[in-house]
Structure formats: structure tokens, C-alpha cells
Amino acid sequence: ILAGIPPEHRHKITVIPDRRAAILHILNCFGLPTHTEQTPAALTNASLSDKKRSGGTIRLILPREIGDCFIHSLPAADLEDFIKKGL
Image (cartoon, rainbow, N blue to C red; front, side, top):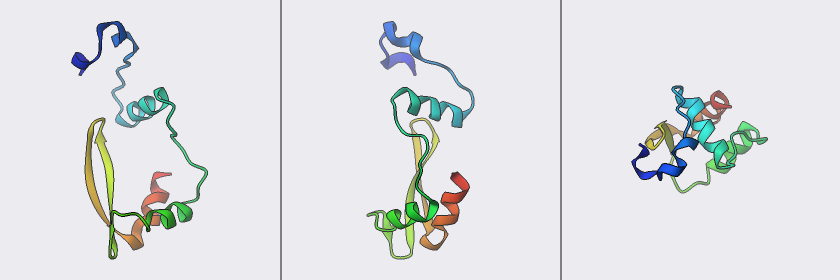
């Protein structure tokens, strides 16, 4: 993992065994958002116009690990409940 990071920057890398904590740490390091003020209903409505929606199904890109994501197909009717569980 450290092979692509110059030696003078390797001291900045923090090893975090918990996946969720590691992802949040990386997002925070780059100043990226880790929460939203939007409601699950608002996020659902915005997502249903996404190009990854096909008919009654929406495809979500979800992380397994840092750098390892997968496509998860979900019935559009279940999206709001899925979002609620993640908030």
C-alpha cells in the first residue's frame, strides 16, 4: 500500500483496523463530507433521477474496503429505507 507514497509522506498514514473508521478518516483528511443535512426522502428523490436507475431498479456503488467497491442493485421502492439505515 505504501509503495506509491513518497517516503517523506509515509508518516502521515494512519493504520486504522476498523473499515468504517478508516473510510471516515480518509474522507476527513481530504476535507470531504461525512454527513448530510438532507432527509432520506430528499436523498431518495434526488437519487431516483440518477443515470444508474433502470426502470424500477437503481444501481448503487458501495465500498467493501478502501479502493474496493461493488455494484448493488436495489428496487427503487426500497431506496429510502436503505438510506435511512445508513444515516
